[in-house]
Length: 500
Image 1 (spheres, helix red, strand yellow):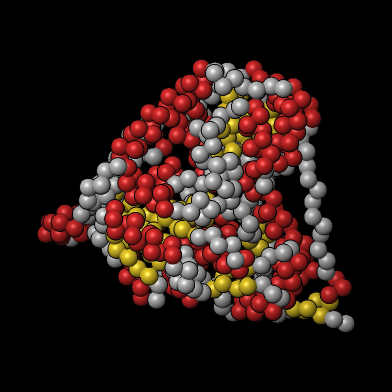
Image 2 (tube, helix red, strand yellow):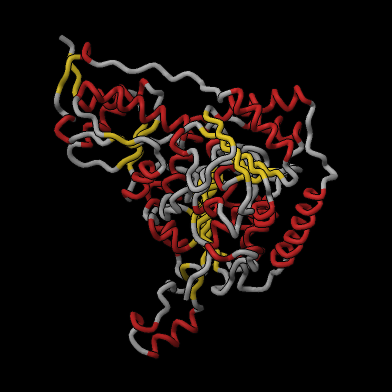
């Protein structure tokens, strides 16, 4: 009777689910699993930091521990399916170590078929359209669920046919291009505060959307929630209408109703005037900051010039505090599933792992797309040794470290020297401070990559152009900015300020 080991079963089950890559850190007995994966035709990428590997657990909807060898295929199938349909394409399955080298008859294992596409209740769809038509200040929020549901084509048609303004969540960016005429991301606070009806596509009302609550939201706002997962319905705010189903399928249902009724939100509505006025005002403030070229540079100047040079089809990975928040507003995405950041849990340290995974896939498929990883200096420190992984596999990731000498803010080198004279640094140095002018570029050089130190606009542009032209090795551009540089004044800073 043909037998298979647990390691082979894991590998073959993943291959059956069309998994092409495995990322990990090996040790006994995981060495056998990685080797079995390679034998099954799955590419194995060895990482340096468990956080970069464990990131998939944080972003997977499903995690489980199979109770027996026979259960492994179905558990893996469910994990991969749940990830693909509802969350990023990564899954977490906890396999007991003693199962890896155990054996089972092949005839005792099988995998499950893929699930059907689910539609929302048609009565609820009709009700949602009625609520939208009655809205004076409607808003569509496009979340990462819409990206993973591959709903970009139907959502674009729905937005353009209905004439509704939309706002993307961080990883919903690019489902519709950030420069789309109906995108009101530059008036985010005003849009959230004054919207009376919000159509929510695959986004959670969690901390990233201020829980859907006042003072950031209209206390009387009506939520039309579209989601694949029943357990997400009504989290924090009870929806006026709940549309449970596949994002793309439900969007199609809504589109058919809009098309049938010939309804369109008027482009001359006062709501559009309010939003456009706020967009123009915010753009003026950001432009003034971006055009400053005094040394040391500020965040807005750095991102302004980066945005001018990045290819429109590049994969943008970003993490950090101010770096991620400001970069989110200034680095446009024009295509879906082309942005990865710290996501729902705000987890720092995942960026380099995401960039490695993206670069490995892009290289294997020969897409010609660049992967650009924009890091704060603090965020880079969590998984900085992954630059060795990039060099080991010759992955041409462009890492940009926006270095302000600290977490949120730091101090310059002269202030640091003065503090050292004041006493023990563990007692006098601000908890948010890091070593001034740290040479992260030298870390990349140590492993054979390209490292570049940047202080001026001219140096930044030259370094980025050079790095983007190099497809043979990774690059790290260490951009030294003003330690006191900050975001522009926020209308509602209550979720982004310290109580100190």
